Length: 289
Image (tube, rainbow, N blue to C red; front, side, top):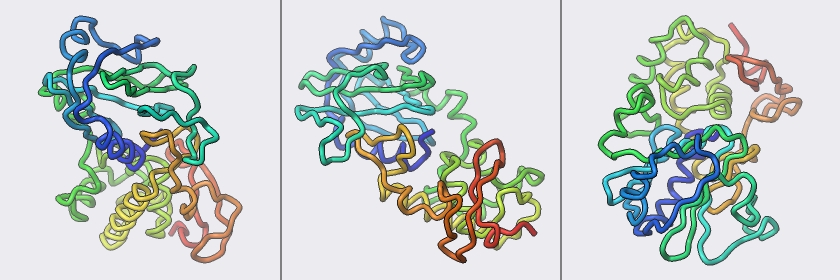
């Protein structure tokens, strides 16, 4: 599933491409992926112009001048790919993963009046695009429950510790993955930040010292910012707004590196299962005390 850096990368790309574009038509082949009343689509989407593209946790928000917003969750395999006048095939040197669109994974197509198009692709059909009044977006159950943004300037290590300690009897990896604690962190960046902080993922929150949590906070922000800089992680389906790969996994320290040497101590990285997810650790750097 795309995590905060991937969704933020898509947001930044779409923010440069979409504002000012006017929706001419929308087509979809999977009603559960576009669960919107035809009347609302006709009145508030068709003919509306994009004013901005925002993100909250792993959700994208395309705001319109009709005072409605397209709320988009990519889920496991969702992609948002913009295509203008130039169409790049999969073999183009821009390292695109996308061939001709639409394809068999395309669920929703937004056609703009200038001839450009935005494709919502989703192989597994878990993602969705909802059209809602902008004022109602904060009232979505997800929005009311999701935790603070880990990269917000206002979010500090002290608040991070306070939120973690609400689940003192849970292991730290499970808590990092809990979107109600902190927004946007998934499996890749949980593993990476725990390695950076030298914390075993099964360590209970109550057994962590404040200094360890402060180090974890620093590492978490470091890996998230680095991942955004590298365009996210293309493990399987993720691409950015132009269909290009993210390169973070080339810089990962432990994720997908099982059997390889730890870049810090040269021990062999191991893979196990924690919090129901494949988990990568260095058994020496992250020794469970």
